[in-house]
Image (spheres, rainbow, N blue to C red):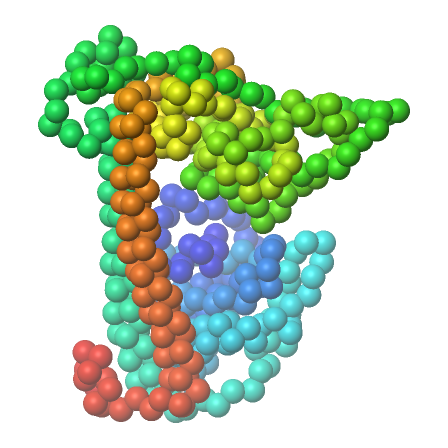
Length: 406
């Protein structure tokens, strides 16, 4: 059984498909052919999630669509590939939305009403010419977008390797290294030390939710949850509040400079965090978010945050995290036992300044590439719209320019 997501591309992973039995009488309405259009008619979330259509031309075996999809076979006056682009344009223009019904969190498309939309259709010969032109043009655009996404991935890898090198070797990687005597990081630069986090900072647990304070005066405070603490930044889009006595709040109030670290979640997110800059004051933190308070004359908060974000830090928390079926967790003891490669305070500040500048530069480059991807994506949508609506006519010259034989 095939879903829209399974055939929205060239390669189909047959092993990932679901096997279903189907009565012979229902087979004609569900069997997907090369010229069959498959429309996603049910789904959760936003209305834009339903109405997407793809052509079954990449299927090289017998397959059926699920009952969450609608199969449409094009007749002799409609080219399947052209019609798939026509429906792509309709989907991008959100023409599906007026024909969507909401039922218990599920979006359902009234397919018949949606397909009764009146549109201008050219001759089959022109449909095929438009489809060929769009196929070649979109393939070129998609290749350009894929190349730019690879550039972003390369910059991500450069960021990770730079972070690992700087927090474990400093800015002079060719400088002398000495044995640390610790299996987590066997060699460190001369003049550095390898110190457990509990020796240079205090690990503070947060507020356990659900406690009753009946009969006590309470005050409403904002507080941070795990969802607010992202890798390298704090997401304050949605900040919850709760009412607790001021005396209780005093013990779990964040201070500017606290390094926030998460206690649980996906394995690769254990210990992730960032520096709290005092964006909200006062602000509390729940028990699943640790506030690591650095001893000022020993460690710089931003340097500590960079160490925890490095491959070295990720390896430690992934190796020591307690795993369950779907989640993992750490605790204050394991956080405190984390060995920090520690240069002098002036060098820590130097390394932080270097990483801030370097990552700012990489982020700016990625921002430019991201805008280029947005431009290409928007152009692809407008090109399809112009071609299927007749605003752009496709002749032999256009086909030749796209590398398509007339």
